[in-house]
Image (cartoon, rainbow, N blue to C red; front, side, top):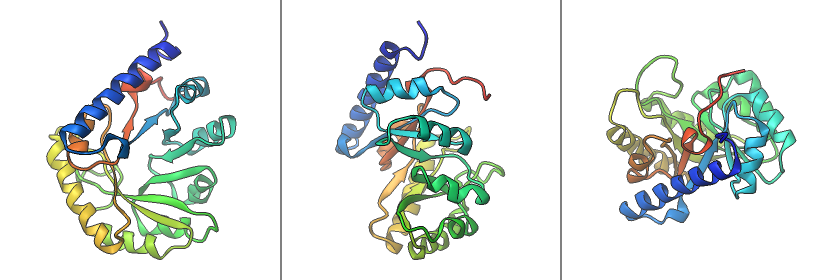
Length: 227
């Protein structure tokens, strides 16, 4: 059976939903307050449509051209979350279809996104690893970026986002993210959202307050190689 067939997708989607419910309840949280974003980068439009038919409305993409093409081809009520590193020169183009941008990590990017009439929610991406090339702002720089987002026109500060460092236990890393989230909420009390947790560490993320999970292969199956 192809990993993209609806029956296989349904079973994996249900399995992840069960994990989310179980982990949220173990953390004393309401599972309905958690948004699971299905990351579909490199997957065909047909797979996204199949997931849409199964009730999914939140999808994550990390490459502008691919995301733009999918957004044009698929139903208008899909909420597209841009989760990859974003070039400043492409920022305004991404705003045309993205409901949320999870990877704002520098002042220049905020400035590039500033000034639109419609509202886009953004997460400040935090670098929890200190490794070059992984994206994200240094924790010490997050408050300044958050303040710039708050003062920008057409942007709404949703909260913070991070990827757990490679080779490190995810739970302490997500605990650090939660502490940074608390500092951001001192700047904007409504910036309560935490985008953290993927297929392998969503339980740890939920324990530490994640509101948005970015789940790929556990739902979509093996990702095709980049075209």
